[in-house]
Figure 1 (tube, rainbow, N blue to C red):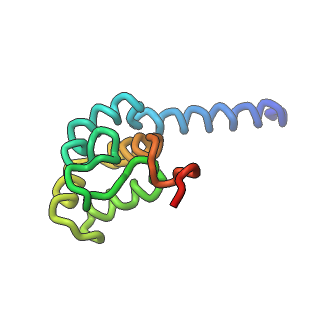
Figure 2 (spheres, rainbow, N blue to C red):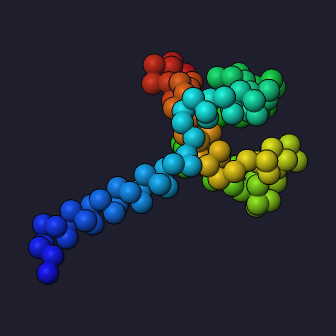
Length: 117
């Protein structure tokens, strides 16, 4: 039989292998930034803050899960916007997740604790 230690080690190695293969398709932060500059910057600005129009939402600093869900909802049609629906339709799940992580990592005025309102 396999000792308890070997069994635990095999399980750990399996988990590492499975998670690394799943991560293999994920975008690096650099790839996500490049995709953002190609796809998102034209409307939302390179910084995700200064959009072309004031009505365009600030996406920098938003929660990654929120941004990813919004992109998936635009792609599926659950969330309606002709422009965003068309853009999201061209993105893979990995690209949407990468873009969400990228924009969530950017500085934002949305939670500026030093602001004096």
